[in-house]
Length: 112
Image (cartoon, rainbow, N blue to C red; front, top):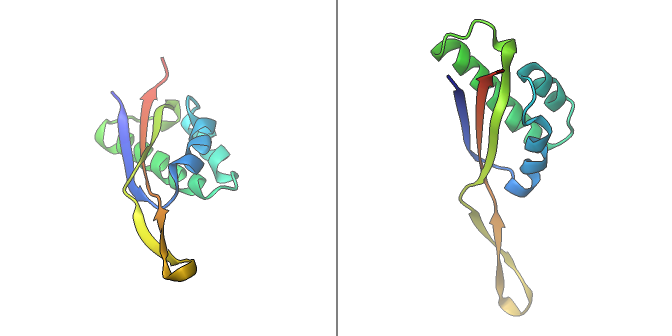
């Protein structure tokens, strides 16, 4: 049985978070957390928290006794809604700034 955790409306762009997710996809949970702890990217903190949450969900809801046997089966960074802001430009115009958000989904499973 798989354990799932979702972090929604995370204030990091999906384009910047996806390379960090690629680092830990398919890795053991302990290895993934150690790798993310020393990754100097903003998205690494959010993905770290999502994996910790999925591991806690596995222990609490699915009765996994040994969480160290779990691995990152799937990690998905989807696009969330934009925050729309405006910046003044020349000749009294305004240009739109899209502050992007992400939805992070982590699925943990036992190694087969």
